Length: 60
Image (cartoon, rainbow, N blue to C red; front, top):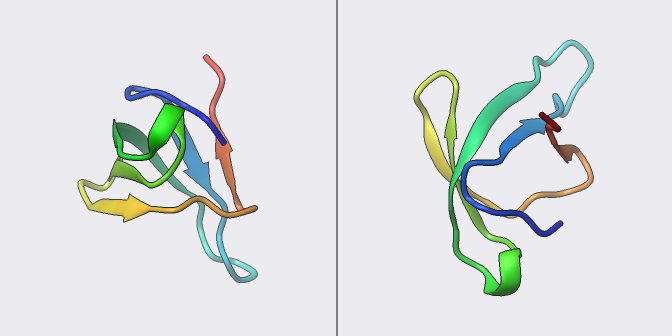
């Protein structure tokens, strides 16, 4: 998954009934757009994320 800062990301719930988490990639810390990504989620939480198969980029 290669991306740039400003891209929106969705992380699917890890269990049945768990909500999706939506956020914006603030900083790409890997080489050539690769992970890890520093993400600011819509609820204000910030985290360093190595995306897995449950992550997708939102398309504008």
